[in-house]
Length: 113
Length: 405
Picture 1 (tube, helix red, strand yellow):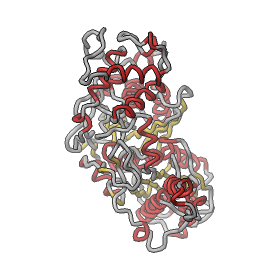
Picture 2 (tube, chains in turn cyan, purple; picture 1 turned 30 degrees about the vertical axis):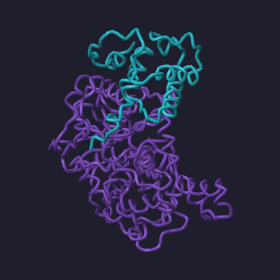
Picture 3 (spheres, chains in turn yellow, blue; picture 1 turned 90 degrees about the vertical axis):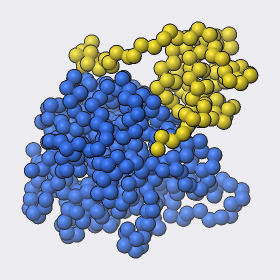
Picture 4 (cartoon, chains in turn purple, blue; picture 1 turned 45 degrees about the horizontal axis):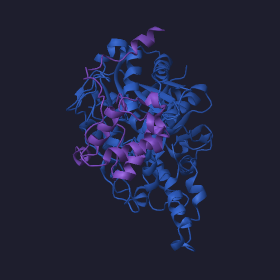
């Protein structure tokens, strides 16, 4: 490790609560199953492996898979989900899905002027 | 070593026509991002872009617009004409073998490609004639050739193609060509006009376009906004500038470039830091002499954290005392033009001794932790300014300009 590596360490992240261990409660009946099917189809992962505490790493998902999943979400639910800080820092699948669904809310898409 | 002077510059951007319009928008934090108004774009999810408003090529170019030119070339021609006029160089002094034209683009003439594909693949348009001049319009070197033709420049002419580093690299290489003695002067910059429906869709699919605004270094950032425009500089050797009694507007003293050689999308802080260090070393300037950094600051999740980490690596804790701002909330991300347009902001900051603010910073991201001035532009004692450009594919280019006394 060099000096520059040390200097590049980002400032301490703000504390977050523990990562969720259960699927989030979603606003619509059947929505969770649709999203999980997109994860399985677009991410090309085994259905049994898709658990709330599964991580992208444990599922073998890389960034291009996440982009494909977000495209699947867009086509299924007619929403546009850009890559946000919350999405990119989700710690497991339950948290990822909770963030995606939160960002589908129309007020998230309003212009800030 | 031969020192390279900036003696003129011109711009076309979302702020309008001219470098002064661009500087005023950057200084006052007036965004050129507007609702999308474009045919055949109904199915796009993202409905904003930083397009050039009311661009009338015929009026700006004084009558005839070559049929072989499309929007990105016309932007470059208008910006180059402004740079030449500002510099006071005569047509005779500029023409000839001792001048170069180096103008980069990320994409080239995609507007003509889009139109021709629309006609060619659509059955309802079968038999409708496409653009006959599409080949000379589309080629990424079209802009540079048009500028060389317009000014009779018969020395080296080419464009550098390195995505979002194209503009900065074109200016950097032109500087090196002047230093080497290969030429005495160069028209150098970058141009882009790729706000087309299919291009927008491509960026949407990457999930890096924000549906609401570009918010560099903000925790709630959701991506970039596509922009368009061009900026062109007249660079001259110190000797050449002095020989014709030119006013030196700023010195182009440093250029650093590097390749991450890691990933097409994911940026690397070490690569970005290396380019900054090389620009500083090239100029013989220490980090402590840098009074302002015009950041690449795209507003994407990945870039901003990476750029902040690279800045910390180069400046250490002292980065907290160096104001940093990105012009992309105002100009959009103009890809191959970005390095050139943002160098206009850097040069104007030096000339006016003003630091332009970071706009759209609603909630600073603690992972970025930079000195991001908000509100009105701040007066500052600026001697040297850095301008960063980092491209997909891991290509980094950094330019350093210094105040001309």
